[in-house]
Image (cartoon, rainbow, N blue to C red; front, side, top):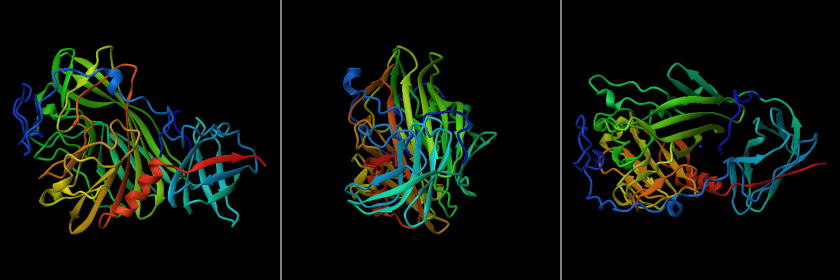
Length: 444
């Protein structure tokens, strides 16, 4: 089994803007065509206390199955790995557990019928495998044996990014450096986002630098109406020239039989003060789960780069955003976990939201699943009424600061599908994500 190229922490498997249609953009080049929007509530004059609104950091290893699950003993030949389904039926479920003593080794899980599953263990002792099926209330036992499995998922570093693939099929590219379309100003240039995202059938379901919003980039993170050291700035609408988000470094990447991924760092820069306001880390993990759909995780950790807090004002959008295919301009489909659509879903909260549509006559799309540990989960959404994008926006109910020493953690799981949206699939994957099976290791 391939191991991490470098040690890393593993995630389970990581002025008012043109998008809001309000004037008062920061000084600089004019933004692109405004999107139609309802009036935005006034920005609060006071900033809430950081301790009251900054969510506590989650476990350092987000892949741990549950906080009350103890660290497992060192592996021994013939040990039993026991998985309990709990109250849910499990199917193609990503299972993760701490496995002290297994770091750097390759393992197989053998069942009583002669079948075997690859178990991927990182240098930090985190073990991950995919459980094919287990009914609610039941448990499954596997015999643990050392043994290698073929690499099934890869993260291939390229000159300007990282290409993630399951087998020979590309899932997406992470862009370390964007490519400006002709005639687009340098203020819009950024890296540190995912595009293109493809379905298992190869259908492109994201867009980059679209003509109506040049600051949209596939899957990306940014905050809009922000204050830092007395200066007002906008990391979302980079065309205004007050601030920008960009790629800083690629810390590590890895391949494996169960999953592959990378860890990257981004900078949120105050251009007026020429100072870094926020540091961000992404841990992105792609799994080999099922041929019919792709699954990957994105864990983000943001922290103030100095003792100065970054104050995020109440706003219509901001946080993590998702831009759909250019062909969906003529009609995107939105479905939420609460049964809402494009017309009824804007401003509501949801555990997950699907965006899709037809590309060259073929229906395709992806669902974004928010982890229940996210701040203000289930988070409110901005679903654009005309353009194919939406955002999970924890700033919609009210502003809050991001401060040094209190990391702001956001976790999302993505399910990428061909065909019509599959609500049962998205619900099942979200349930596994929110309430994973319990695992114990028993020595013979």
